[in-house]
Each structure stands twice: as C-alpha cells, then as structure tokens.
View (cartoon, rainbow, N blue to C red):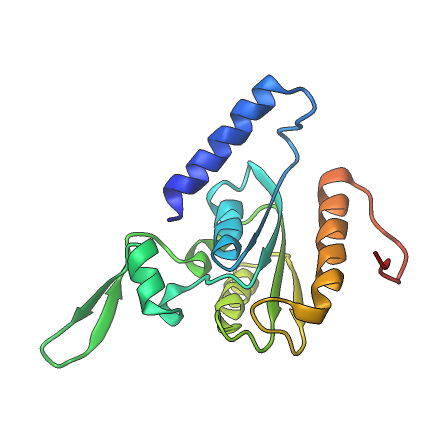
Length: 181
C-alpha cells in the first residue's frame, strides 16, 4: 500500500506542476488520517526532498501493533508461526519508525489519546524514532478524542491550516485564539 501509491502521488503532482504554473513544486504538502496518516508520514520519509510539510493524523505507523487483517491485506505482512507456536511477522516494507531518520521537512503528528481504532502507541513509536534520530517535529495529542476528533474537529482543522500556512507559505499566525467558523 505504501511504495507504489506514494510514487504515483509524486508523479501525478510533478505532471500537474508541469501543466499548471500556479502549482509550486517546491512547496508540496500532504495530509492524511489513519491509513492516510501512515502514508503522509511515509511520504515525508520516502521522498524527503519532495514533500516539504505533512499533517499526519492517527496513523497506523507500525503495523506490528495494528489490526492483523489490515496489515496482511494492505501492507504485505505475513504471519509466521514456528513449531513452538511463536508468532513473527514478515514485512515487505519498513515501518515508519524504521524510516523516520530520513525526515527533512516539517511534520505535525496528531492523535486522539483514547483512539479506539489505531492505538496512540503507533504515533509514539514514530515520536521515539524521531527523537532518537535527532529530528525536529511537532506533535498534538487531542484529549478525550477517539479515532475521529469529535468536538475538537474544528480545533484540529485550524491547526492543520496554520501548519501548512506557516511551512508552505511562510505565514505564521500570531494570534493565540483560534477563529470560530
């Protein structure tokens, strides 16, 4: 699920930028939630010179600790059980924590602290890898929020907008208060 779609996304953006002068190929951002959170973080690490900023939400960054059916179906994960009954997982791709050291751009990781689909530990494994690699990044934990951000959805929206505005357009919001829509 990761490598081919990311290459396709990059190629499509390059083709669109060649056709349309209003697209600045030097300021490409990406956002994703859940599987898209996994993909947006992977994009920043697989193509660190292309993607400049990402807002990655509730991503299943390490499928060793995510639902087996998802991993096996979409990520080329194979479960192997030896004669003692011990289970190991064989991957065709590296996890996001394993490629986190390749990050060059601006990454905002967001997760609800009671996510009942993708455990926050997925994001914390990326955080651990980024810290150990000496990388700067941003993180937002949304208290009392599950996989969707519920009553904090508007707050999340403005943080996303502000992040891309700052890191892709160079315009940083200085007001403390988040606007009401």
